[in-house]
Length: 428
Image: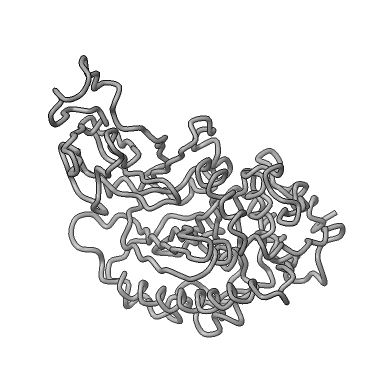
């Protein structure tokens, strides 16, 4: 994405988007998304069984597990899982389920333990998940083979400092699944990043309603008229559909970065030691955001980048988690400049989330006949296509399916530089 041909191509595409009079020639009309995808418990159960248990999910950053015995308890759909750093330095993931009667080994959100002990009946395990001791072992049939009763592992792989987990033992390796995302993130030098803050919000709506809101900039003028709206030109936004359900959005800006910072309240005078995040030419000068399927949005700024994640609690309840990453500032306290940036983010998140609970009520109405999506909103439709593909179309009732329409618009690594423009109809 940062070679001269790709840069020139993307700039040409943004100009074409700004000047177009309609969707590109041949772009398909997108059928309405069925309301039941947001309201039907059976569809939610299909997601739980076939989506969340079979995809790679962001779990934590390595800096949260610095020392042997450090652990982090995960709050992901349907799976009681924790991460722990072993004495040999490896980070492992286990189901938080004692082999005796299923009680939890870990109950705190994070901490450190040389030995994991079930406080119910005192069974104990080491950081490799091996069963060490059993209270009143004499009462069990002998010989009692502890080697067969260790904790059940969960697949755990790293991308830079980012740790992902996957319950599916047959899933492709993390980096293969990320695909083009890995190459495009090289410019950001992700090994230099660390979490500066984590904030959660709980909403009474379906997780997809929440995610949909962050997959387009069609709402910019209406929702963010005085925050991010003045800086972004939504009419020139370029949407990239990538393999495996991932997407990219690049949006032109109406003002230079320094002016944007001043508008948002964390200008140069407030940076107070915040180092700049590495980025290529496009990410430095335009608004760039990726969606890592199924539930991560990754906007990037000059001094920070975020992981916004949307976790289903129930059919109509969602936890939104925002991890704010910055370039490592070394020893000592977090730079004071983060305070102004985080205050601005609170304002923007309040703007973004304000209507979602109302939308959930609306989609339950018999008058609502489905999401009607425009060309500019095609990332939403593509995300739903990917959800159906993960579930398996054969498992989904016909009235809840999304009709595949966008396969011809998915970018490939080999034609990354120019072909997507021709395929979209933006150039001939």
